[in-house]
Length: 367
Image (cartoon, rainbow, N blue to C red; front, side):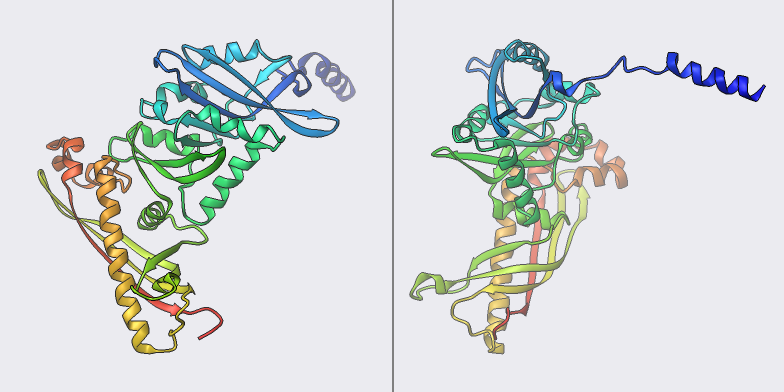
């Protein structure tokens, strides 16, 4: 009896197994990076994709471009321009042109959340000007543009210059009325692609930008410091050469706090405090053995960074981008106050009180 049952199970395997939903890579053209822009009349979407090819064993890039009314429509037209199947499930980076990013970006990202084959771990960034042009310059020399952009983002993430963001991490924030987000921002200078800081979003629309130094400061205040966070600030004037007027330092284990101290409609006050030790990595005058000089530098650096924090927060408010999630805190802990507010009108008028206290504890391998 046992042998009969075993025989039936073995035979059944022949009929129940199969690969009806298989997707053969050998019949697919794998997309590694994509860019989307609005056409000049903003009536259609222009999509640009980089497909990985191999010529005599050497990887190269093939660029294809098409326009359509929706992202799916763009994909249909792109599929007609390549041999085999257009396969975007391995896409590693999405670039959004500035004009498109200033619209509701979920309208353009909807397909990637609905399609089960989409890679929601893909990085996403904004470009100044048309995003499609960013995928073209480096293809002339067979440089692997997808890897270049991904490595640029990874490097900037490790130095706390941009946030760690992908399709998945921004999804819930886009639908959170009490919180906003930032995305990496690229610029193209004479066909050289450079990270230029971050794009600020008000819900799902780009409304402003920060340079990489301002981004670093905001990420520290959001407790998102990565491996390194480095700043340069002026501590003297009139010295020659000019390099002697500046100091460069790393922030070590910062303690940042964002606290709502008063929450009334039309009268919201928030404390921004940052305390941290710092390590000096460059200071040409080299008087750090002098205790009096160290105290002077502590005071100047703290004052400069407090001013920088105040100016950066003003830019964030002008963009109406609640990257600190203050609205989310009000929703959670003061719902009655939240219900009385028009947050989009309230946020730009919040009074922020900034204070930065930094203390030199390291001076490198020399005194």
